[in-house]
Length: 311
Image (cartoon, rainbow, N blue to C red; front, side):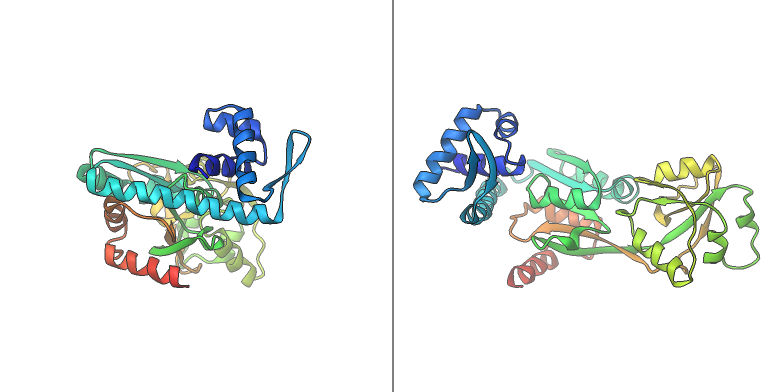
């Protein structure tokens, strides 16, 4: 049994059982992958894939268990490599962070700047997506950590580390009637206007919906978007009233907009870091986490991962 065979096996599964796509992804030949997988099946004495002629069409019952163990073995092989790098190349390596646009644009820059100043030889990459997409990146080993408000809890393979709580603000064009209210803004005030806010998968959209539903309000959502900058652009064009994460309003740049605090109207949301429970983290990864969330010291992160493993 070879790690290469396990890698071929897992990649075919990841590519929707398409051997051609797996071969392209791994920069090898389709016949080579098929041959190695059959050799592995012969060695194991079980058939992993169900075939119709030359096409792979499904996974057998035993095959699902083989794939689960193969993914774990590949991850542990990667962990072994990281342990060696930790002691040979202390300040060299890579760190891939999967996150949403709002976190990448407004929450992470300060920590990333400090991290790169401390570790200039570490190759840092940001991958953006929906909370579900970025969680899957960490599960699959494409990224080291995920930073998001939602989605991480859906994946039992991931440990969740709480970073900070945040709430929302209303943004409107300057001179908008909502800026002249003589009372704290209410949900009724907001619902009287078309609303521009996040797509349902993002940034605590569920808390927004719950708050309006509790008051039997059904505001018109004129536009839902994947990132805050798009929301602010269309608010500035007069499309509606924006509901955004408070941290995403920049007075220096959003000069044509006015902001109204709405934190009293919604339950706060919590941004979390997601890490594979069985991953080995390089020392500089612990440092990045602490730069982003100072209360998450290396000891606390390790303790949290140990508790998750026990669970």
